[in-house]
Amino acid sequence: MSKNKNLWIVKPANMSRGRGIYIIDDVSEVQLDDNAIISKYVDNPLLLNGHKFDLRLYVCITSYEPLRIYIYQEGLVRFASEKYTLTDAKTNLFNQLTNYSINKKNVNFVKNEGLDKDDEGFKWSLTAFIKHL
Image (cartoon, rainbow, N blue to C red):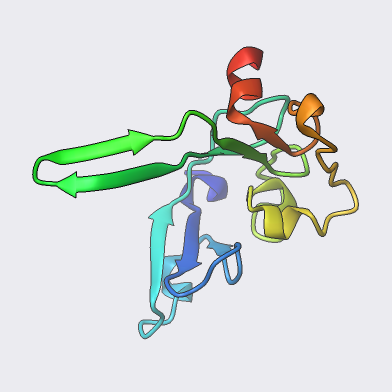
């Protein structure tokens, strides 16, 4: 098995904006007293223009019994600011993570400049993404 086939992503349970996230290749690297979520790393993700992306969808739950959920018609698509590769997966979070808070610090980051250009840069509208597909 290739070393890249044994990657795990560790996300601290009490953090946000991508803070504290790291990638390991041996689960013994995680301290047993860490309050974190550890999951097997997807090493062949769906890419768009060579970049990893995620969908940020917004929902409103108005009832649990009966279950009633509304999904807002618009959302966001956030991209990693560097093209995806596993070569430096443990050290280069700019090509692994899609968190805006992390990627806006990259010199390669391209900011979206307005509603009329919602399919440019590293944060798109969901509408622009669907049109692209």
